[in-house]
Each structure stands twice: as C-alpha cells, then as structure tokens.
Length: 339
Picture 1 (cartoon, rainbow, N blue to C red):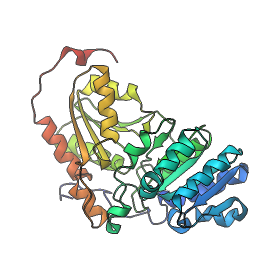
Picture 2 (picture 1 turned 90 degrees about the vertical axis):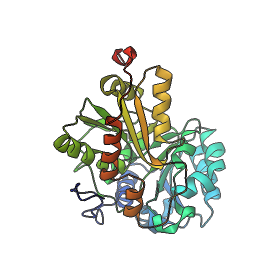
Picture 3 (picture 1 turned 30 degrees about the vertical axis):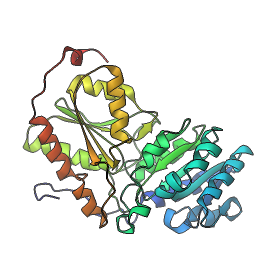
C-alpha cells in the first residue's frame, strides 16, 4: 500500500475477536435455538470454518462427514428433502470445485433449501497455494440455476446474510474470508436485503461497485479521492451477485457514466462480468473497467501482499480511478436516459 493512503486498510484490529467465520458460528447457534430444523455439516473443518460452535451446542444436529465434500453435499440434499435446513461449511475452493457436480445436480437442480457457507474465499488463504485459493467460485456458483450468491463485506454483514438466508427459500452460497479482514460496518443498524445493493457513498463522477473485502477499500479510496483529487466517487456494496440489483447498476451508469468493479476474484465470470452483462443488455454506454485477477492464477504469499499486488487495496483502487478519469471518451445521448 502506498504511503499516501492511511486508515484501516488491512489493519487487524478487532478482526481477531470478531471474524466473519466466528460471527457465522455464533449466529447459527442463535438461530438453532429457535429453529430445530437447522442442522450443520462439515468435511473435517469444524474448527477452521467455526461451525464447530454449532457442533458444541447441538451435537445431535451436526454431522462431520470427514474429508468427503462430495458426499457432504449429497447428504445435505437428502436432509433438505426431509424438511431439515442444512448449513454446510467448508472452504470456498472445495465447495465450488471439488463438489460442484453435487451442488449443481443434487441441490440446485431440485431447488433444495441448503445453505452453503464457504470460508477462505478469494486469496485469503494465500500461503496455502492454488489448491486453496478460490478465485473462480462466484463464477461457478452464479452459473447454477436457482442458486443465490452473496459475498458479505465483513463480519457484521455476514451475520445479516446468514439470518436472511434462513428465511430465503432455495440454495444460497455465502462466500466469506479467512477471518483476518477488517470491519467496514460498526453494527447491524442498516437494512440488508438479498438482491438489493447498498450505496455507501454518493457520487457523480464515477461509481465503484465492490463486493466482500473490497467494499472497505473502495470506501477508503473514495474518501481519499474526494479529499485529495476533488472527485465525487459513488461506492456501491453489491453484496448479492445473484440475483443482481440491475436498478442500482443502471442508475449509476446514468448518473456517473463511469463504472469500476472491484472483486477478490478472477475478472472472468465474477462480479465485473455480472455488472457488464447488465450494462450491455440495457443498451446504455459508459466507461467500464474491472479490478481483480486478470484471468490468471494467484501468486502465493501473505494476503495483504496479494491484495496490494492485484490492486485490491485502497491504493490500487485510487490508481485505477485516476487512470479512468484521465481518459477521454465520447459521450452518448443514451447516458441521459432514465433508468
């Protein structure tokens, strides 16, 4: 991160006490007290994914299938067929790739009420290498019919997403990090609705659309650019990649005419592609760019180093915004159309 940006970028302050996974485990225990149909499953990752908190509280409603992710999702599908509400916890790389067929055919094809909590998303498990990186998972999961895909900004939003998932009929994929990510939200005092994006900064020059950990970085970049460059930067927390909030995207296109997406994911098939699809189908024009892994496998290293390398931190976003703002593009009358 460059020295010109200061703030909470990648400082592990309260994150060790309040990680995304730990909040998930606590909320699931809370929900389990009032809903006896909730059951938990994992593939020998109870401690890492924090579903072990649910296991301790409700041992008779928990199954550790061992290192057998494909079996785990098949079992979850069977449980859902009996009326139970399975929460399946494993790493994002394993849920989206090793068990992709079972998620697609056993769960999504039957539109079963199974909730997948996928931890260690993106490059958050950076030192573990390619086998444990999940930089294609959002693309894979959003391609499955009936699947809802949510990428919370932080632990606070993870809690809201888990609660919303309980009341949402059908399969849900919630992708969270490893647990060392700083918080954006200070409390749960805000509205969260599946499929409804949240505008966290208003602006008229350019819009940054982000998901997951990139939301905090985008907000910090917007604040820095407003103070130092005089730019009015809108920031949208697009926590639900599917179903996507077309209205928020097209409103941003009309009002700012420049769109930058930021994702801890391959730029092929993920958030940026989803947003681009909406814009292209609308017939509206804008300057558009994507920050993320540029169709490549991730390097190995510390998470904070990889975030900086792939321009996912505030400094990288600032650099990209300045690049976009420095380009001239021909205005088209359809930018002035109503959304």
